[in-house]
Image (cartoon, rainbow, N blue to C red; front, side, top):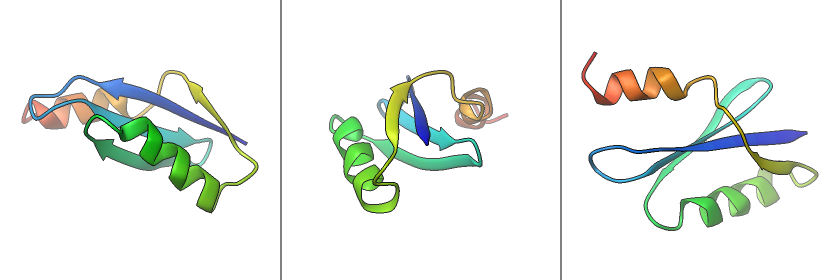
Length: 68
């Protein structure tokens, strides 16, 4: 299983959002967000592959952060 992730530029800092084919599965703020994702994946999806890719929820998250 692949876990796709993208980094969203946000006012409080970078936000990493990740999803599987089933939907949004992980979000994290801060400079260590990718390491947090890797630790999460090892625990809950040990056979997964983490890939940088477009995340479906990214546009909705951006709109939410803009207050829309």
